[in-house]
Structures are given as structure tokens and as C-alpha cells.
Image (tube, rainbow, N blue to C red):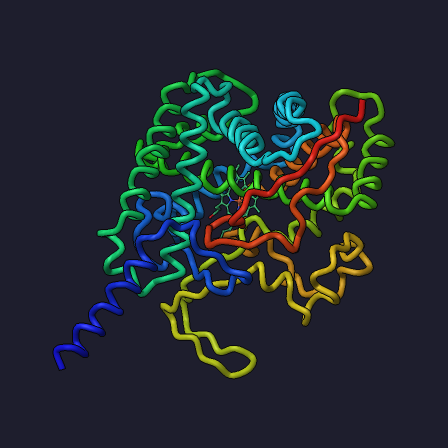
Length: 412
Ligand code: HEM
């Protein structure tokens, strides 16, 4: 009896230690079915408060901030995209003819862009702070992805190494947001930045509210846009026929001009289809979670009671053979108007759908297209990592076990 009890205890102990105390990046999954919803476990502090803040205050805040992502504001952001795209191109120049992991450089660039639309100043932080921040976000979101994929461990999670890592990362993220606030300077402008707008609405935002919102924007916007750009570059490298087509479209529309305009980017219809297809196969936000507000009965007769937390696996919806013919084939023409009109509007969800969808989706598409223009004008991309090499790991943004690499060949 004692022997059996010891064996059971040891088995539970070893399994728990193995599952809980390995690093998040040690676990891999081919499909994302294993990763449930962020927020099913209350470990996230202020970031999740913002994402899960519901009801009246969210509605008012959302309405207020939406104007920072409207048509007029987007026009004004072109200058920032062009400037940062240029710098990114220059930095990539150092890596020509080598197999390059470009995610860090991309994240650096998207972070500077977000900083500028939030607080309007050029990032005055030292490189080391940016590196720490990007790595903290990475650790943090892997911890969330991991513990949410193993909810059974939530009771012991708080005693784990991973929780300590999560806390350290959260501390770095908070400090980073505080530093941004410190650097903020009041600058009367016709184009108010996100922070200006928040500080102008004290009935909606107290100090903590401002901080939380800043963190939410950086968290929601940085790794998603860098993942969107990374997978787009990876797909360009791996589909040279489409890369040539995108390149020709850019040359035809932008010509010798240094800076593509808003209208130029809007008229690049092939690039648009290409990017949509890239985000179908590699959605930067692979899943989202919702709490069911009232009982729902599905068409097939299942009742989902109010209060249930459900997860929408965008990754798997996008690869479903019931929705897409040959779902694993990369084909931008799926997004020709005549080919997409029969599909259900919720069959394609890179930015989610409904009132809680991504507030910045037009911004993000413009940002990624603008970077692609800059990069493709300078470099031809060749594949290093292939689609079949990729193993995804639990994370709130679509992350891979091994770094994705591509090779840049200078066009000049
Ligand atoms: C390719 C890039 C991006 C993708 C794929 C993406 C995707 C998403 C998705 C799927 C959601 C919904 C989450 C949910 O339903 O639970 C969301 C929400 C959000 N996104 Fe994005 N996003 C991107 C870029 C950005 C950028 C650049 C920003 C900021 C500048 C941003 C700010 C936000 C915010 C604030 C929310 C919460 C909206 C709310 O709850 O009202 N996103 N995003």
C-alpha cells in the first residue's frame, strides 16, 4: 500500500515538475489546439484588466481612442512609417548575404513606431532598455500561453520559476511604460497622440488607467505587428514567384520615389492579397478568448452556459478544409473579391471581429505594407527556414520553437 502511494506520489511530483518547471519555450505543438484562452486564469494583473475590462468604461474609452486610428490620423502616420522603414532597411543592410534572424530588428522598429503614436517623441531609451523590454514581452507572453495551455497547474503556478520570470517581466514592462510617460512632453498639436487624448479625458482615465492603457497598446500592438511582418517576409522568401509580383507592383506604383504615400499603399492590391493570405496561414494572434454572457445553443444543439470561457482558434479556423480549399497552399488569389465573397465574414479573423476587434487594424496593415515596400526595394529575399521546419510553441502571439531565418540579397 505504502509502495503504491509512493509510486503515485512520485509520478504526480515528476509530471508536475516536468510540466511546470520547464521553460515555456520547451514545449511545442504542431496545431494550436492545445492553447486555450488568455485570461482563463487570473495571473496577468493590469494587462488583462484592460483586455478584459468590459462594459461602459471600455465603450467610452474605445470611442475616444478610435479617432487616433481613423483615415486622417493614418495619413499622418505615414511619415513615421517611412522614417522607421528607412532605418530598418539600413540596419538590415549589415546582414546581407547571411542567414538572418530578423525578428529582433523588426520588433525594435515596430516598438519605435508604437511609441511615437502613443507619446509622440522619438524613443529616448537606451538600446539595452529596448532589448530588455522586447525580451520581457517575449517571456511574459510565453508564460501566459504556457499556463493557459495547462490550466490544471494553475494552483501551483504561483510557486513556480515561471511565475517568478513572469513577475520579473511584468516589472520590466511596467518600468518601460513609466519611462515612456516620463519622456512625454506636452506639445500642442493638430494630431493629438494617444496619450494626449487620454490625459485630456480625466473622467475616463486616472494615472493607473493611463499606464494600463499604454501597456495594453504596446503589448497588443508590438509583437503582433512584428509577427505579421516577420511571417510576410518569410512567405515572400519562400514564394519567389509572388515576391517578384509584389516587387513589380511596388516598382510600378512607387517608382523612384523614396517614400510611398498613403494612396500608393492603398493601391497595391496584390500586396494586400499577399498579406491577407500570409495572415491567414500565420495569424499573429492565433487565438482569442471570450466569456459567454448568456446561454448559447449552437446549430448542432450544444448548449454553452453563460459564464463559460471559450476559445476561438483563429489559426485552426484559417486552416480548416471546410472553409478553404487546399488550406495549406499559399494562394493570395483566395482574397480576390470574386473568391472571397462567398465566405462567411467570420471565416477570416486575424484582427478578431465584433466590437472588441483590433482598434488598429488599418494602422497595422499600413505599417506592415510600408515596411515591406522599403525592404523589397532594397533586398531580394531568399528562403532559409521552410514551412515544414516550423514548430509552433504556446504563446499569445504566433511563435516558433526555432527562430525563423531568411537571407537578404542586396538589389543594388
Ligand atoms: C498585425 C498586427 C495586429 C494584429 C494581428 C492584431 C490583432 C488583434 C486582435 C485579434 C485583437 C482582439 C483580441 C480579442 O478579441 O480578444 C486585437 C485587439 C487590440 N489591438 Fe490589435 N493587432 C495588431 C496590431 C495592433 C496595433 C499596431 C495596435 C496598437 C497600435 C493594436 C492595438 C490593439 C488594442 C488596443 C486592442 C484591444 C481593443 C479593445 O479591446 O477594444 N493592435 N488586436
